[in-house]
Each structure stands twice: as structure tokens, then as C-alpha cells.
Amino acid sequence: MKKDSSSTPMVTVHEVARVAGVSAATVSRFLNGTAKVSEEKRQAIESVIEKLNYKPNVLAQNLKMGSSRTIGVLTQSLVSGYFADAMAGIDEALQGTGYAPLIVSGHWHADEEAERIELLIARRVDGLVILSGKLKDAQILKLSQRVPIVAFGRDLSSPRAYGFCLDNYWGACEAVGYLIDQGHRNIAFITGPSDHQDALARLAGYRDTLAKHGIKEQQQLIVGGDFQESSGLLAVERLLESGQRFSAIFCANDLTAYGARLALYRRGIRVPEDISVIGFDDLHSSMYTTPPLTTVRQPLFDVGKCLGRAIVKMIGHETLDIEVPQLNLVVRESVKRID
Image: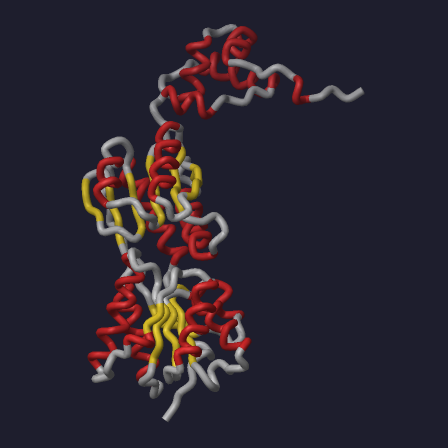
């Protein structure tokens, strides 16, 4: 009968030391590389490690040295493509550094975010990466006194807290400017949450670009949303029921555009032949919508890589020479030129 390997007692440092004929302290120094070990003892220890199939308790070793070799990552969703791209970038940046990510979600609730961060700190993470969220900057700065923090969607600069934003205002100006260049004048806007910094910047970009081109803002064409597909669908229903004329819709993000597209489809309204639609984010699925979505690309994978590199540099007390990625307009097939 095959022996169940799971029932085999774990080999300890003391067992390795006993068989090798050295002290446990010598084995520990060899494993940690904290002191020189004679060639004779090194060979004896390596031979016993191989013979007994000894697996060092890396976590225990790191904690003794004051490090867990983990980076806490606070996201807002574990299923959103938006956050998934950023987390993939963080993971790539940490490869080869000896650090591993430990990911939790705050679900867009400040209290839950604070609770999850406390959980990560209790697990002795070496640093924190925060992807957006509801926490105030002052809260993050206070938390950084306990652990180094790098945050996305924040403008922070202190010895233990660094954050950067992408230029959402510029991106919105590009999107609306493109619609105007294509002949559109009656442009509806489905907003993001009223307390979200990115959403407010995109709303400002929409308004200022209309004004720059001498187009009077129509308050009835601005409809509230929350960055979710359902809000895009409901917003378009409200726009259509209002009787307001519009030839294009600027959506505060791609998910909103997906919902808007569905609402138009259900009414038999073609995109872009009847109504043009433009989004913001450039999620991976946006190139496969019907038609493929014109949108403002946020290079979220690159953002994640910047965040991962920044937290490692901050932990190592290195200079944060981080080049923040730039937004750009991706033109596909969901916008029609009109006369």
C-alpha cells in the first residue's frame, strides 16, 4: 500500500542538523546566507537536505528577518476586467523580485477597504498597493506611517505614500472632440458616480470641450450613471423617453457603453448608423462588441506594472523614477461621421 505523503512528519531544521552533525544555528546560517559556513559543513548540510527532502519554511524565515515578502493589493472587484488588467500588471512587475501579491477586495465601501487593509497589515505585508476606492487621502497617508503605500487614482507624494492619476480630463476632451470632428453637435453624456474623482474629471472634460467649440450644453443630455452596465441601459431609456434629440453618446466608461448599446439594440436603433457611441477604458472585450467600440484607452496593465515597480522601490528606499502611462483614443467602428 502506498504511503500517504500528507501524513509524513515535516522535516525540521533540528532534524537536518542532527543528521548532518552540526548545530541548528549552523543550518539556519547556511539557509539564510547570514554567515559563512565551512565547505565541509556546507556539503554535509546539502547532502542531508537532499536525502531528507527538507523544505524550508520560507514564511517563518522571512518573518524572523522582519519581512513577509508579500505585497498587499487592495482592489475594488475581483471579477472586473478593469481591475484584472491592473492586477496582472502588478503580478508581472513582482516576478523575480521575491515578492508575491496578496489580493483583497474593498467592493467600493470605505469601511470594508479599511478593514481589509488592517487584515493585510496584520499579516505583515511589506507594502500596499491600492487600486482606486473610497478611502480619503488623509486616511491613506496615516496608514502609510505603518506600511509603505502606492495608490492608483490618487495624487500623493510623501516618503511612504506615492500615488498617481491618469489624465481623465484630457481623455474626455479627446473623446468629445473626436465626436465633434465627426460632425456631432447633440452629444449625450452618461456620467459615472458623482463622488468619483475620475468621473468628475470626465464630466468636466465633456463640458469644457463643448464650450470650446461653441456648443451650448444641454442639461437634459447629461444622465447620471454609476460605471455599471445596468446604469448605461437605464440612462439610454431615460434619454429616449425624454424626447431629446442626440446623435451620439459619450459613456463615462466601457461598461456603461455596453449597457447603452443593449438599450439601443432593444429599441431597434442601430450603432453607429443611427446613434454613435464612444466609451472610456478600452477593456479587452471592447474590440469584440458589435460594432467594435471606439473608446479612450487606459493602459491598465502598464499602470499595474508601474504600481508594482513603485512599491518594490519604495520598500527598498530607492528613487521612484516612475513614468506614468498615457491615455490615447482608440478609433474603431461605433462612431459615424455625419454632415
